[in-house]
Each structure stands twice: as structure tokens, then as C-alpha cells.
Image (cartoon, rainbow, N blue to C red; front, side, top):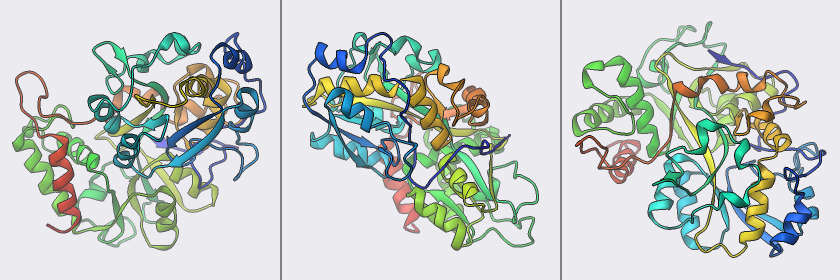
Length: 392
């Protein structure tokens, strides 16, 4: 399956965004009334992925902050984080109210008691959430919700259409040395993701290529399975041009550094397509990992009322649809999939709405992986993957 940029869908090098221009009603309770019901503290601080919180600086059509501030009196400040690990570290500091965390960070913050249980009764739009996400294991622990879904999507294989006459069908093009359709080797022309969670991508590939390993869950690897995955990644190290950790830098790498294939996010793909670069993306036959981001509230948030107002605001269908249009993600509110001029009525399908069951969503690996099995914990994933990147 190929993910294509929807006609009229703007993607810029800033990330996940949304536009205002519609009403800011809260399912019968507008934001001003909500502020009166739970008086706002005047500000809210958020750690977010690039582009998740925009006020129209890069494109005036994409501003879901200005109206919120006017309605509530809650001034929004944002710290952009480049990785899940950075988000975990920043939240431990205690200076932020909210974080838009992916599944490889969320459970770590729950276990570390960095975030608090969400009072869903304070979120009028809770019932409008996609039922597939309401009780997702990366934010729900023992029946308690420690986060509110925000956006989700698959990690795609981005490729240069001049190097590939047809869309590649396997992740092998980034894991194993081979001659591509343009007659050149892929060595030095492919990238890998720098985060330790990328070990799961390698495990998912081996699940298909080497079924004898018995991998059923790429986040629950025993020692034998894990050793095979590390061997694959050590081999990949020999052909990797760079381990990317900045979406905007990867865009540059595809335009000026000769990179022709890499795991990526729809944001980079659509940014490059918007620049009329020869780039497309696909979902290979082995399946894909993915991210489902969750807005989480610090255990000792200084501005909880403004934080709850922001969470509610972020779930409005107009906001959700505009974010999805900007980033190439999927809204967590299905109603956002219809009637949004930027996303269009085909946008959710194009961005992967129907691929949900094929995605192995990021989550933190643990040693006790159930059914009496002992698995390799995330702490070891971190040290081993750093060593591989260093050439060891």
C-alpha cells in the first residue's frame, strides 16, 4: 500500500498542526464557560513533537493556539522535544504540565509516577474518541487512564522514486545490502531511526523473514530472538548513511545527501512531496511499527485547569482533522475524518486509518513479558543500540 499526499493537503517542515476558524465549543460547554467552571491559572506548558502545537507562524491557516488563549486566558508555551527519551527526561524536571508522548515513553512515565491519572469526567469529548484507542495499553494501566489519545499513524518506508522504479515491497532495502533498481548499491544511501525502539522494527522484519525464531511480538524478545535482531542491526550498520533523529534534517538528507530509502513519518514524506521532490512512501509486506501519541498530565502539574482545557480543545473534530492534514497522521476522533477541507474525506484512509490492526504500536519493552517468559528490558535495548550505532 502506498501512502500518498492528498491533493490540497499542506505539509510544511514544522510538523503536526491545526487551524482555527471554526467555533471552539466543548460539546455544549464552550471554552470560556469551562474556564469559569474550573478557573484557569493563566498558562499551560507543553512538551510536544515538532509542529504539534502551532500558532500560525509558519502558515496562518494553521493556528489552534491563538483562539484557545483568547477564549481561556491560558497562555500556551511549548518545548519541542526530539525524542521520547528527551520527553521522559524533561517531564521528570517538573516544569511542564503536559506532554504528547508516544508509547515508548508513556508507560515509563506511569511507572516512574511522573504523570497522574486522567479524570475523564473533565473531558467532554472523551466519548467521541476512537474506541480502538480509549483503553490502549500504552496509556491504560489496571483500568486507569494516564493519558488522552491525540494522533496516531504508521512508520512508513520513504523512498526516492528515481532509485526505485516501483515501490519497494520489503524492509530489506534498508536492512540488507543490495543493488537497487537504479543499478547502484544501497550502501551509504539508506538511513535507520536512531532511537532504541527501532529494535522493534528489526524484530518485525525478522518475524517474517525468519519465522523459526518464533517472534510474535516485536516488543517482547527473549535472549535468542534479541541476539538475532542485534546481528541484523550490526549488519545494517555497514550500509547506513545516518541514524536520523530530526524530521527536518531527514528532509534535507533526501534532497542533498543522496539518501534514497529510510523508515520515516508521513510528515517528512509530505514535506518533500510538497517541495516537488521525487519521493513517495509505502507500507512493506512485513508490516510496520507505528506511533499513537497520548497527551499526559504531570503528577504535580502547576496549571491543571488550563491543562484540561487544552486537552479538551485538542479533541475538537476541526482541530483533529487539521493536525492530521498537516502531519499525515490519523485523528483519534473519527468524526474528524469527514468534512475537513484540509484533510478531505479521503485523508484518513490515505493516512492509514484502515491499517490499524497491522501496526505494531510503539510501547516500552519490559523484562516480565507474560506467559512465564523473560524478555530483554528496554534498558538493555538502549545500551546495545547505542553500541551498534558506535560501531561496536
